[in-house]
Structures are given as C-alpha cells and as structure tokens.
Image (tube, rainbow, N blue to C red):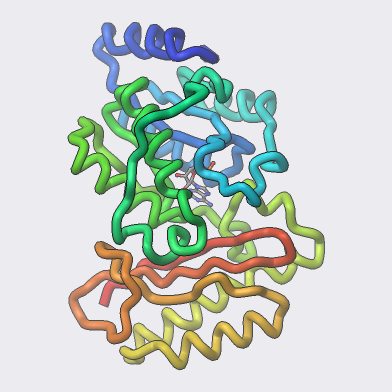
Length: 282
Ligand code: AMP
C-alpha cells in the first residue's frame, strides 16, 4: 500500500494505476476509521479495481468553536486498517499540502444547506465542497463512496458533481451501527460511559417516528414534538429532529405518498454532537 503526503505523489500513484487500465474507487475520510468507513472501502472495492482512501481532518469544515483540535487523529492505526482492507493508496496530506495560506475563491451552497446540519453549522458544507472538489480534481476517481450517515453531504456533493460536471459516479453506502443501534462515528469516542448508554436513544426515537409515519401519520409535527421532549428528558439537547424532502432537503409538514423523505436528527449529549437518519419511502 502506497501512502502519499503530497499532491504530486498521489497524482503519480493514481496515474500509474490508470496507465494499467485500472478503475479507481475513492473513499474520502477524516480518519479515526471505524467499521462504517471500512464498509465504504468494501463498497468501493466491489465497484473498482483499486481503492484510494484519503485521510484528512479538513479545517475548512469546522467552525471556530468546533472540535477541530480535539478531533481524533490515529494515522498509524488507520493505515493498518486500510492495509488489511486491501486499499491500494492512502492520501494523507497536511493542511499546507492542500490549502494555500490565502484563498481567493470559495464555493457557495444555496437552499440545500438551509436546514439540517447546514442550518446549524454555517460554512460546514462550503468547507466540505471545497475539499471534495479538490480531492476529485487531484484523484480523478471513477467512483466515490460516501455514507448515508451524512445524507445531506451526499445530496449536496451529488449536486456539485452535477453542476460542476465532475466525471465520477457517486455511491451512498448504508449506515453501519453498533449492536445497540447507535450509528458508528469517530466522535463516539468523546462519549462518557453514561452518555454511550444513552446515545442509542436517538436511533430508537427515529425508529418509533418511522413506524408511526409508515402506519399512516402524515402530519408528523406533534409526533416529532413528543419525541423531542422524550429525548430531552433522557438528557439529549436537540439541534433538529424533523422530516425533510429527500431532494430539496426542506422540512415537510405533510407527507405525500410516492415521495422519498429523510427523517433526520442531530442532538447533543454533553459536548458530543450525534447525527442519524432514516430514509422513508411512502
Ligand atoms: P468522516 O470520516 O466522518 O468524514 O466520514 C467519512 C465517510 O464515512 C463519510 O462519507 C461518512 O458518511 C461515512 N460514514 C461515517 N460514519 C458512517 C457509518 N456509521 N456508516 C456508514 N458510513 C459512515
């Protein structure tokens, strides 16, 4: 397995693979790899000959008061995991390899980042698009795999690929969960023992709401209000818990048959922000 730090090196490594006619699968990550990331690597392997993984804690997607400094960094362990998954190349650049000191050009997102995580994390998706745009240009993959866990990210990146004409196929991989239902996340490491026991409550609430919706509740606002109160009583602080249109990412008051929805929540447990979602097709 090749480990590349510089853009020249990763370009060279990918060029060599492409010269052999290999199809390139790409999995962008911020490291601290868990089974969710590994499932993305497996999906990429199924669809490509060689898999490239990037490991980069992207400063541009963290707000000034967010956890950039404390975000887990475990490069050695990550490289071992990538190696045992059969990854061909890891791109693990430093900040200065990726960004100039001063930037003159930004990407803006409209409407699609008004709600969900975009609503509570200003600049988050602009930061993600900046780095994903760069990574797509540097690596030029045939297929890239992202997780449903960050479904707003997937939808916004899909839109960027469409509007900027990136020549890449995007795959959304299902959410990998712990046995008790908690969506795996690098940030779960922040949870205390007590918080970890409470954390699957978010997934349980989503499941309960989904059941009610599937069995006929088509205006879920009261249902959502009750579930928020229940979660608050368990110690969660709610950022959002709502049903969104899968395409427009706008909140939906009345659910109509024949459409796809995202039932999504973001909550705080102490200093840890957790997100989760379910896709609902009526
Ligand atoms: P991150 O390292 O958190 O930026 O995540 C890198 C990729 O892994 C993103 O596409 C995430 O959506 C995906 N991912 C994170 N957690 C999970 C999970 N539990 N199941 C599936 N994919 C995940």
